[in-house]
Length: 234
Image (tube, rainbow, N blue to C red; front, side, top):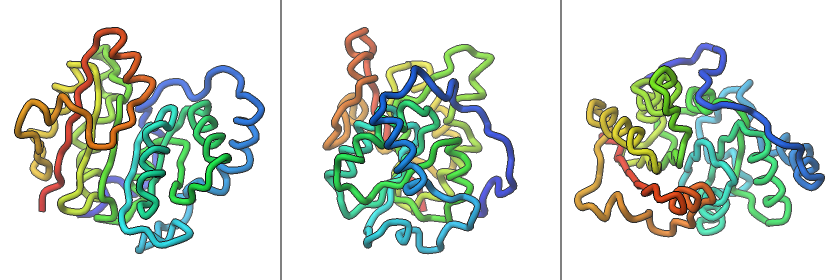
């Protein structure tokens, strides 16, 4: 499968604002010092062997889109040191928070990108990822903004191209309309299958799930999280 869009184009605006309140000094320092080192360089072609992006061999590669505060990304990177992680987050404050945490840890299996995730998806080589996580994305609740929801036929085509057959796409949300939207898009896509067989498969978090601040807020506000997992078919 060829890339759906190789040509350069403007951001597709799947996210809102780029920056919040002023950064704390350690966060600003980490952003300045570490992001240039860890950021993917999309101006050059992606390596055919994507594992060479990391300083030592990795056996699996995962992508997390919109990692927020970085709780999940950091947890997964700690528990799987032989996995290479790519984290994408355009919100400056979230990126700075993650980098400040990385500055105090010896993790060397994370690479980052601070703009539109579709740019990374279009840059990646075919069938290079074992998993993609999209966790609590902006639901864009107004109908006129639904086109900004990250789950779309075009982006599922992108996922299908970069995931290995048998690879997984994990989606978590507490917004019923976005959950139903995602299931409808998956049902109409020939290269993905929902792997759930019983209610616990979408009511219970995935193994090793650390939780996130956003999820805790949703639970406090009596919204029920849902955890969906889809397999890239052969």
